[in-house]
Image (cartoon, rainbow, N blue to C red; front, side, top):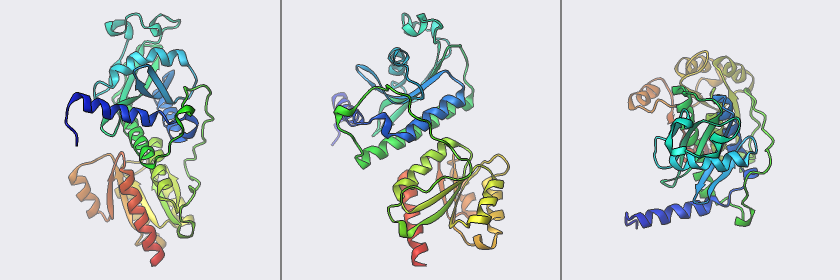
Length: 325
């Protein structure tokens, strides 16, 4: 039972950190893809997903090896984990907290930092961050993307700990090599290894945010027995549905060429999809939006970042219903 004392909280945090020390970069392709996307999306020079320890940063994922920048960046990340709101430093040369930081004295200096805390089991233990050599003010969309990325990383790490997918502590390492980036297909994702290959369920996920796709793929991987295809637009979804006939639809509310509410009746107009169960998956986590989704004919409503356990439970139930039917 928690006592609420600072010591007990710190002991719990240290236990989480100890568990996270078992992660090795090359075993976490989802995290590598997430950080690659956030670096590209913000157009920054560098970024990483890191655990913040007393001795500095330990990197779980990064698109490029740069130990000097990572070691110097630990000062920024140490401030980031102090607050749920994260840390935005537009120009570190103007911030006395970072006087003397080698990032500011190297040529060219690195002066911009934006990071959000990663929370695991209720403790802020790491960060997802980007840095750049030019002062800048991030857009609201960029800040929200960082916040969403941190939430996704939290979900992924929580899942890993629950699975006990850990390596011996002696295998833990700093990032030393650049991982091979994975190719992303906007239209089709190969099925994950199924836990129950004889009871495969065809799921079409319509989503244009690649980070959200990664988290949904994680749910599919855990569920097993699911063949997943991805469409980034309503037009792609209709094309895939005509040739593939999915058994479950998962639609984002906001798409480049339409929205999930308008897309559902168009998909249901296809004879084979007239009674296929559909789920709304959106960041609009408001009670009235959930009521709207149910009224529009959706069987369920999943807010982002998705609850992996809730999604896997639903997919397992749907697969069993499809098999028994």
